[in-house]
Length: 352
Image 1 (cartoon, rainbow, N blue to C red):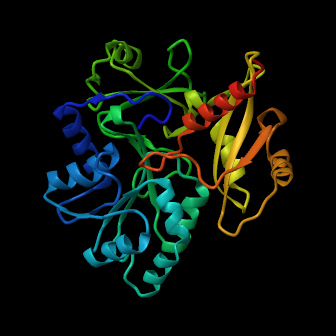
Image 2 (cartoon, rainbow, N blue to C red; image 1 turned 45 degrees about the horizontal axis):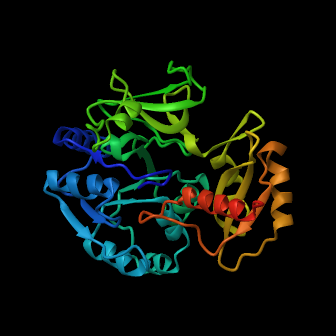
Image 3 (spheres, one colour; image 1 turned 90 degrees about the horizontal axis):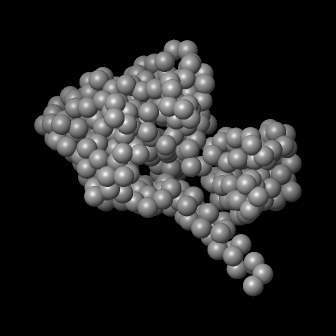
């Protein structure tokens, strides 16, 4: 999707996709009797695997949704066709937890009566959203993790044993490890880059041998670009994108941690935090926020809110309100565009 840089073409083999299809099918205990709602764009690897390849391999029913917004048409479609498997991205789950149309269909007794597997991927899901969906619908969301280059599924929370805030454990046949800057595997609890190896790893980047060599080691380990850690039970946890990590006077700040705090404010519905280079080898933290409908908050109020929950070096120096955050077709926030905008502003304001 090119959220952090120039989009690259990922070359997949049939063996990549078949192995991932079989392992994911076993993980979610899917069968011919399941009904899948293709809600996300089919050009995205998440939907392509979960809502197209897997049901086709099973001979199961696929129901196509025209659009994610507004939600009422696809919610009615879900109810009418008795959908059992729903895969979506975090913004959809946030929408469902607050949707008046969904509440109306629940009261009518037609919504979610057949659903048994709810899957979230493509971006981190907040513990609050997990709790909200559980409270409203009485269902657990199973969170997983993967990338286009991993076909895409790499880890999944086991059904019946989810760990909120975790991306789960590796699927069958896939290895995952945490490595430091020197490429050595780190101990339990240590934070480093997530690397993945298995039959699901891409053949390479299209017409870009240098990028392929940089991404996949000679031993077959794919460098995800994500920072994470493994807990004592073998569950993995995402901390941030490596490129989204901010350095403040030599100290690492995970933008995702700052965003999580800001999203804890009742008036904030979306948050994106970036580091802006100061020209001296350090960065300053800036937060872009979208307020919830009917929500109200001031910059001083949010600074005070951050002071209560974040160490001084982790607090945003600047806060800006936006009507909406720049996003790609899968509703992933494009921090790259925010950085480019800030860079353009700084150049414009620089002396001639």
